[in-house]
Amino acid sequence: MHASQREAAILKFMANSGFVTFRDLESQFGASPATLRRDLERLSKEGRIERIHGGARLIDVGPSPKIGLTGVPFHENIARNQAQKSAIGRAAAALCQIGEAIMIDGGSTTLQMCPHLDGLNLQVLTNSLHIVSALLAQPTTRVQVPGGTVFREQNIILSAVGDDLMPRFVAPKLFMGAAAVGEMGVMQADVVLVAAERRFIERAEQVIVLVDSSKFEGPSGNVVCGLQDIDIIVTDAGITPAQRAMLEAADVKVVIGT
Image (cartoon, rainbow, N blue to C red; front, side, top):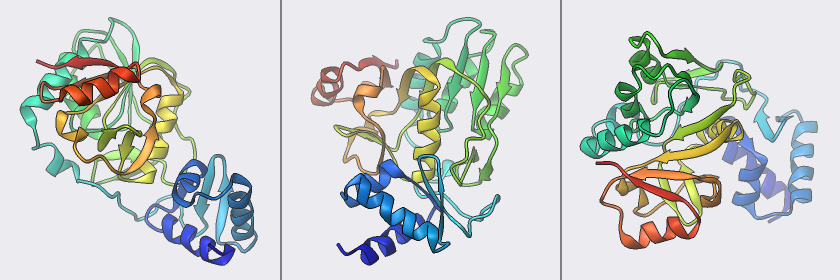
């Protein structure tokens, strides 16, 4: 691909979210890191993008961009596989220790943890307004949220331009969902979600993924992290022996919610 064609493709790739990570560019275009850096440098000199740590953003994306996320909206996803998600949430909450700090990424499955956290005296960092609402009624649970834009489709707070607006917060455990899980790892539909979840992962000692077994069928999307970066997957009894073997081969512990 000629440089001008690749630059046009990069701008098109960034159009939906206004932001892209350098890792996503390498995965999408297969060009060398040096080539991609030269492309970004030319686009930056032309005033079409701004280079930021770990990637780039479109110049015309302001602090409150009117953009949406790709993927299934929260109000649709919450109704899917409810019994399995409830069991997964209960099993995930059982992994928490009294008095510890945890991070909970927004999602319809991670939300199911909330009723089981009451009384554990946890400090919780979450980007989900649904999770904030569920935890506010718990007098011993302290809640923090990052800065950013509210995305109505998922009712979560994300930094759409890639700036790190998260509190200086580290935690023994991160609980996160996924659009899909496969041999390539954990995937999400939108690059903005990918960037946000990678920032969570950087702050966690242990990564725990909550997904119902349907998420292992035909995985696709943008890779958040490889299987080797996951410590535990909490799922349901619908996972197949082959899928479980794939996870255990990557040294991922599998917990079945009941």
